[in-house]
Image (cartoon, rainbow, N blue to C red; front, top):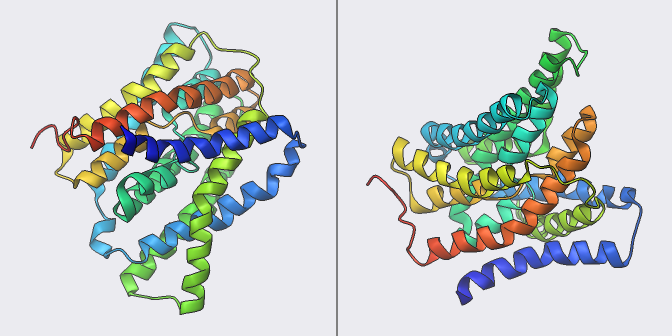
Length: 320
């Protein structure tokens, strides 16, 4: 248990430090802008590029792995979405945000740092693949569902253009594409550039987690959705369990790849879900509550998952 505590405590400790400082020394929400810009546009892209550029190109085309991880996410999304429509009688827009709350994990800010800490550099490739392909699907599904709900008044052509632009110009996806190209062409950056990338990469996890803690503190808990129990169970338990079963079924992947995907699936609701809810003016306070409460609960569930992995309780393949 000491080893797991050593993994989890620094990780969640950084989130808590950000949360506590934001409460003790309140700053305008705009003060977080440059930190988020640094994390999203500089530090995490540098991390993805540096690790992917050193990876043999044949390891970057595991399509069955990508399919399994993304399928698990969207099965969970569909369960919550349909339940919201049929049981809660909610509209498409609100049901979409609920579905994202139950399936869209914080794989950008929390995923790389925790996976690399737990499984080493071997986790870099699966984390980058899952992040890119899940976000490609998210960027496409969300505007499409909002358009169906009538909350997006763009024409089909403009909508398709906006989705394509979001996918093609996202800094994580650009960095991943650059890393894949460098791996394919065996390009090695000059030593000064390599050192700069190393400095930026080392800052990615601490800055991302601190910024996440501040973001949570700036969104006070106001309205707790009655669906929160279902959202928390789907996000923190069903999603990783389903991901584990599907990946065990569709292929024979290395232990670090399977557990990296399961760990990413176990992460709490992404802060981006609140951003999306704000963008469309739907379910905002309850989306914020979902992010905060699943993050708090994930301290226990992620710790339990890492304990099961590191102590051999969870085999790397259900169907060897």
